[in-house]
Length: 316
Image (cartoon, rainbow, N blue to C red; front, side):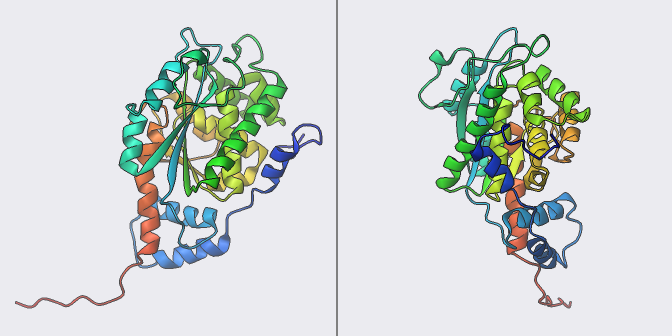
């Protein structure tokens, strides 16, 4: 199986269709964005972001007002002390770091149970989309059956389609739950080795959260919605999504560099350069949320082109 190409029996129709609907960015919109930025200099990565937003949204003036951070919560078999449920509850309560940063950016937060070990302790504010109660330890055995990996991808697609139906211009993704680093390392190593079946990589080496995040990213790309990523787990999920649909990379913004080797390796696997680097290791979407104001700024630069009016010269 070639990366980005699905075998007839490898995926259900809905996911197959989602991947097929991921289009390249609009060159026309990007050219229009470049024209609107002409006359401004020294913008660095902000200029590239503005052009990327235009290409992703397929319009010269991309809307970015309706922003949402989705935090996928799951525990991994490598975790000595699963904490996904506790962290999901804290986010649902509105007092976690990601909540504060999302409010500062004018974004809503949705927290999802993808597969925490103890879902019985979750409060009503957590969206129940669990595929199972935590995955197996990828250091010793496959994380999940292939059917569960497909279900996780499907769940992510359905989630983002539902959120988009309520209005969504920019999606930010985060993860919460223990033991994910082992899965990230295993997924990145498999993708770097050229594994031709990303779904098999997810099933053997990933986690429910990675599957939901990858599926959500694919749905967002199919809907022409740019997605901003948090640290290591989310870029690893993005690498899986890009392996399934290479054109999806144009819709992905690496929000934050993170602070670990796993962060750097996951970003490299997805061929992404981080937008900001503040040394944040909080996870839970905090790095993605803190990058959202830069998305607003890039879009505003397109909406407010440089003035061509000569300013009066003051004479003494």
